[in-house]
Length: 349
Image (cartoon, rainbow, N blue to C red; front, side, top):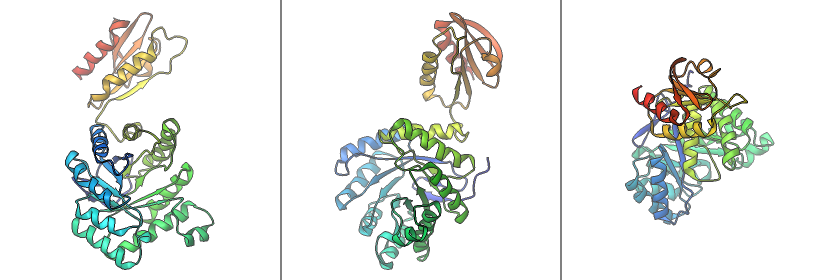
């Protein structure tokens, strides 16, 4: 798919936008005064592959989080700040990699200029975050509701405040808990500017529905070439946001440094415990970095044919199964050996 051309921005030890990879991020949910707990969670996120870690900085004491987390993980860190421009300046002084703040909410031009100048001198980008609950009164009154047009107008207003002081290392997010509104808003934003876009459905919900809503919203935009970094917002453990984010990228063909698993939904022809087998294959493949397609099919009748594009696969029989490669049968094996035999073939690829 052809990606939208966006500005490429340096972010810590990586880049966001342009031709760089789409980055998966998450946010700490440990209380800001719990430094040890925050460091532990940041390490867990980094181990899961999280590429950007954000955390709230609600007060001056929370600035103390920055140094220990930077020392613990080699992942770009984002300070999430609202209203108090002094916290942004303090985060810059302590070596944060990115600031999340809305310039229109921090006071007069002198404060906006102070933050813009500090970030520019340090080479730190700013993310403008707009959602349906953060719209300015004038913009809300003009549009009558938090419409996609209203949210994009708000985002462009904040961007202009930074551009006024010659700052344009900007990332924009325009989130809504309504999936259709979110999609429309990002499509408008993609036309209105060339800044990198941070995709997400805000307040998406608990794990099951949150992943579904995020997959529809984020996935739809990614297939249209829109999006430079993503966050799956879940009411739950942040590490699950990371796994879901990578799964979305994998599903739309934008993450290829790992196996792609296909498995059939089973039917009355299935004679083996395919559900358990598919789950075991998925677990075994978690650490595999090969860009291969692996198939786990329920029956010999349709398996090799339906999954002939798979690099390697298995198809169940009655107490046994087939190992096949690109639709060609390699051999028949006992059901209890199917998993191990499959993994042996994967090691050869």
